[in-house]
Amino acid sequence: MKTRDSLVRLKEFQVNEKRRQLQQLQLMMAEFERMSKELEHQISLEEKKSGITDPNHFAYPTFAKAARQRADNLQVSIRELRVQQESADLALEEAQAELSKATALEERDGGMRARA
Picture (cartoon, rainbow, N blue to C red):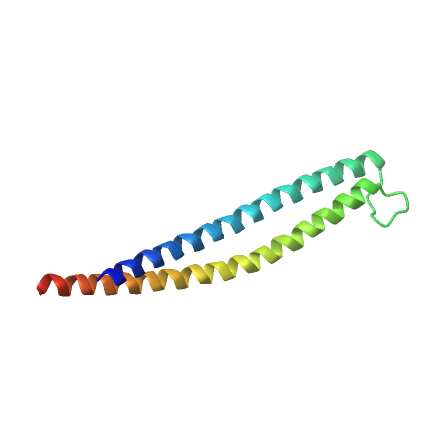
């Protein structure tokens, strides 16, 4: 049946699309982690240079304060992306289950046509 073949192709496309979305989320999280670590390194250098490590100190470096805020924002974004990743994982599992069902139907129909 042509419609079953089209259904299988559609489900394969959906699975591949879900995988691609999941990979993009993982790449974004890895990049944000890298950026956050770089900011932490820059913060520590700035603190060493100024000799002040307390962010509440009146003479704490402005650059370090701004970099700390950016690093904190990145950590918030990473947490939000983890939530999205969990949803994407579930969506991928569902799409794979639907593909399995469609493939099984296609194989069953193919077997019926071969017997006829």
